Image 1 (cartoon, one colour):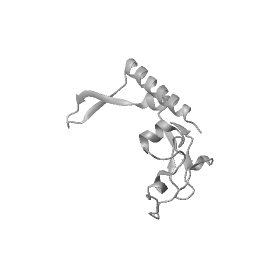
Image 2: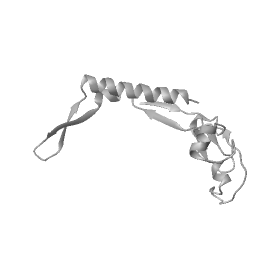
Image 3: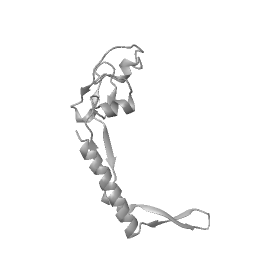
Image 4: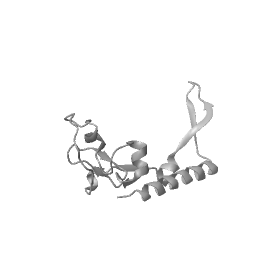
Length: 123
C-alpha cells in the first residue's frame, strides 16, 4: 500500500478538517454553497461541538500526523488479488482465481490514475 498525505485545512476553533482548498470557488460551490472563502463550514453553520455559530477561518494543517491521508493499492497487493472465477465448491462457496493479464493491466491503470489524483493534492 502507498500512503499519501493530502494538503489539509483545519479550523482551530472546532477541529473541523477538509482536504480541499477553502478558497477554491468550484469546491466550495460543490460542498458548501454560499460559504465565504476560507470560512469553516462547521462554525459558520453552528455544527461545531459547542453548537455555536461563529466566524472562524480555516488554516493549513502542517503536521503530517494530522493531515488527511489516503491509501492506494500497490503492485504487491495486485499480485495477491483474487476475483470470482464463476465456479463454486461443493459447499457453494466462490472459488477465487488470479487476475488475467488484461485484468491486471486495467487494475494497474486504475491504480496509476488514483496515484496521479492523490499526487496532485499531496501536502
